Image (cartoon, rainbow, N blue to C red; front, side, top):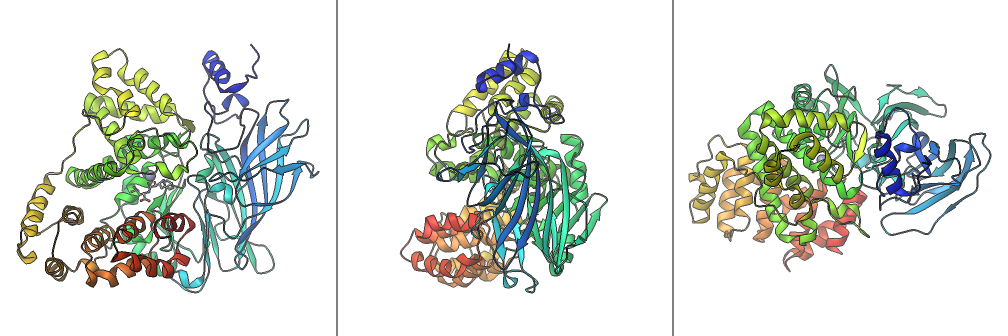
Amino acid sequence: MPWLARGAVLVFALLAASGCGQDASTPSMTAAPLVPDIHSFARPAEARVTHVALDLHADFAARVLQGRATLTFVRRPEATELVLDTRGLEIARVLDSRQQPLAFRLDPAVEHLGQALVIALPASGDQVVVEYRTSPEAAALQWLTPAQTAGRIHPYLYSQGQAILTRTWIPTQDSPGIRQTYEASITVPRPLRVVMSAEMLTADGVDAGDGQRAYRFKMDQPVPPYLIAVAAGDIAFRALGPRTGVYTEPTMLASAASELEDLEKMIGAAESLGGPYRWGRYDVLVLPPSFPFGGMENPRLTFATPTILAGDKSLVALLAHELAHSWSGNLVTNATWSDFWLNEGFTTYFEYRIMEALYGRDRALMLATLGRNGLLREMADLPPADTRLAIDLRGRDPDDGMTSVAYEKGAALVLTIEQAVGRDRFDPWLRGYFNRHAFTSITTQQFVADLQQELIGGDAALRDRLDVTTWIEQPGLPAGAAQVASPAFGQVEAEARRFAQGARSATLDVEGWTPQQWQHLLEQLRPTPLSPAQLKDLDATHRLGDTGNSEILFAWLRVAVARQYAPAVPALERFLTTQGRRKFLKPLYEDLMASAWGQPLARRIYAQARPSYHAVSAQAIDAIVK
Ligand code: BES
Ligand code: ZN
């Protein structure tokens, strides 16, 4: 049999025959992904990138990164082209390893995907150098003016790669199935510090002349390119434990450090479930408020929104979530964006387990119930096909799959498996799953095969009871899904009913309520036709517009917008103009645009706020408001 199989099917047959899977340590052509990724132009079965070396300079005035990417690749001997993903990059030259120019072309742009960069390969050699610059509009990058930072003195830059934005700042094969090690040297103006999702080789940088400093990094473990991340600004550091710490602007360091004080303990809890933490350090970068997500699991360095700084650690589940991705997502990665639920569903389940271990079963159940309720609400509005776990993304932006289906239906499946066999059997399987697939990218089908072989085995009754095929292929939540219900929410629902029926808010029994109970109260009240007097009473008694908990504030503002409650508009305007988290912005703008009362408000506030949003959020809100 020729070892150079043509096409994914043959490669698969070959791998099965030889009994070898993807081997992270010795890149070879047999480690090519088994399934095509419709969101990448790369042809990894011919030539596949294994290592990226970046040498970039950050020009804050021009808002561009400029320099070179040296790509190492494995190839079939007869391969004639290396195909990379790019979007908006200006390519100056492509060179071979002896610095000789290579012919290249940029194919026409395809919606969502950008342009293929097709490089003509010489007969031999395994490296190319791409000299390039990014566009000031690069969707992964946000360049902040000093006024958009907490310190207001220095500019700031950060990247967000997931799902397919890395190609807007790095010319590489931007597919989660094509794992790459990387190294980088990033040069910035002197007072700024650079951090990356990698090991830091020069904590304080080295002088690069001309008022510049260079910071060097390396990541020796192969990661999908969406996890390559950078930030630069006036960034300070404080250690939290032996392998944990927090980076943020100096004015936020103290509050961030106290909010994150349980981080080291969280890793301990996560390790008891997932096995050893394999990435060395775990630090958190708390970003400026425009960061479009709650958190992003960049390896060794989670990026987080400052809206988690509630002051009372009530939002640390978000960190449990990003930490959990160190196993589900970063160690075992979705092979394509249709398998995204493997990342987020396992992680959401894992998040709840970490929260249970650290803060008890009640807290975990409250979180899981909030999540399940959100899923049921969102599924009612989604096209049925998009409520399947592995969704069809042909011709679509992978962002279309980033709904609570991946997170909460995914977590519901994992929980259902757990409850079907009990933790005594489930936990070893879960740890085994992470180990068997460590440093590889897998498909939903590979998950199903693992479950069948390693957990279900010959137990036909269990197989029928779980019915994983229905979970994966059918819309909606299967009838056999594990139930989640928080006992602490029963009382909340009773109080919500009393209030809706006219009880004064001062008479509500809210003694000792957790922030999750408040959030649940407000979610219960949202569909209720409350009067302006009732809203005024609620807000005056409990000062909801002033809460430091962004989830409660968000839930309150949704209640207020649903009832067109004008006195909440200043708080709404403040919230929409002082943070840029897409999950908070999108529903609020949608709610506003749903009424003649809200539309002019949405337009006025958005006109003011848009320049401060990251491209990820602006793109989502453009579609709602314009
Ligand atoms: N990986 C995601 C964020 C993401 C998903 C970015 C898809 C781009 C595309 C991250 O782990 C996440 O899920 N963040 C959530 C927080 C979490 C507690 C549900 C968020 O940002 O809200
Ligand atoms: Zn996640």
